[in-house]
Amino acid sequence: MAGRGKKFIDAVDVVRKQDGRIDLFNTILARKDPEAQIPALVSGASISSPRSPKVSPSLESNAPPSVSVDQGLSRSSPSPPAEGETVAFAKVHMLVIPRTKVDKLSDLSGDTGLNILLELQERADWLLNRLKTETPDVPFLEYKMGFHIVPSLVQLHLHVISQDFCSASLKNKKHWNSFTTSFFVELSMAIEKIKRDKTLALSSGERKSFEDELKRPLECNQCSVRPSNLPALKKHLEQHFDQRAKAWRESQK
DNA sequence: GTTCTAGAAC
DNA sequence: GTTCTAGAAC
Ligand SMILES: [Zn+2]
Image (cartoon, rainbow, N blue to C red; front, side):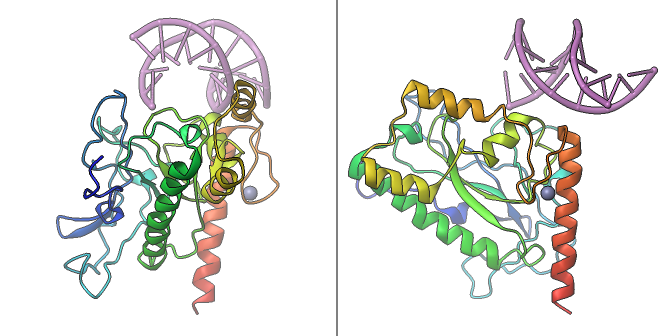
């Protein structure tokens, strides 16, 4: 590929100003056709806060923009996302995607694979710093970054996702387990493994055992509670979020 | 990925 | 009776 072009989609494209407001876009670029070009970044669900008054004129200005996510995705749009859009499974859920054509994590090997992961890490760290400093309403969110070991869409995508998992889009056990079991491979783990083993290839047996993780009983990611069904889990997650928000507010007093 | 629904769970 | 899951079809 051309050496000059940007190898990675700028994460600044993910935090984008629109209509005088700062919107967060969660973005997935599905390359269903293996031969297709990776498209320009497309917008996902807008989770801007209409009542956020603080908006700087430009992402490049000295004063960083205020990005408010307190409205949450669950209240963002009652209609299902249009084609080209995607869903977020938490208050903040973004993807960092290499421009290099790579289907999935298990295709990576050697120094080439390691370098792709390191460049993704560099970009994701940058994004994470922005998220932490530019989401004043939810500074208490914690984040993880990682990959689905067996992705449902090709073109490698690194999830940067807050750990509240409060989202109307979270609708089944598979969704939940894909982010909260070993099916979700954290970036740091992937980097360690490729350094050690020189490959991230999966045997069919390994693949099967990871897929079995998706069928595990529900378990809270923040405490030892094991909700009996998904609605109970979602209610429980809301309580964690409210509790964290309250604790943070009180710590500011 | 989504929608639909049988039947399990409550 | 109502809620919920999970598999099939798309
Ligand atoms: Zn919990």
